[in-house]
Length: 245
Image (cartoon, rainbow, N blue to C red):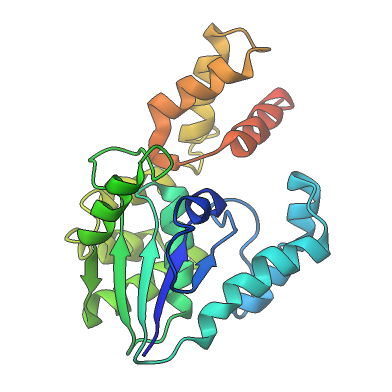
């Protein structure tokens, strides 16, 4: 039996450097970009050009730092204990669903989340607070494991009805799951309108100095923290809005 930790990023890995058990860093942003592929390895391989174009990451770096790291999850055994350190926002949740999709059903899964009822993540927490998050971890039962794996498939297939149905049964682990799923669905424009995050960003741009990215980013985070978007995602949306007809 092994003890493992899947972390949401390098910042948390640095914060938990003292933790001796093996750690895997899930370096991805599956909330944006293409997610086509018959399996996780093919999906990740298909994202190479996306990362090169939008993140200026070479195929070699992406394979080494993301693909090779993420696919270590497939090496876990059925008697392993896996701790999933992911935040509550959409960005983190989609990555967590993908990680869970790779996990063996018979292993023991534990979700570790920030305790506060907000979209703030692990980044602002000190060591004592991080240990408290770990102490309040939630074990995922067999039914919930199946639901999480289905949720990833629903996400890939854009099956929103099933996402809502399966998410409703996971509220004991993530009390705001319904809100997160709704936020995802709201990303898709209706009746030639902008998606929710783009509309929020457009409203901010209408009242804020367009050259002051930090002010724009801060406002977006305050209003739409549920998405968990970083500066790269927000800047990409700004560029897309600039070329809207």
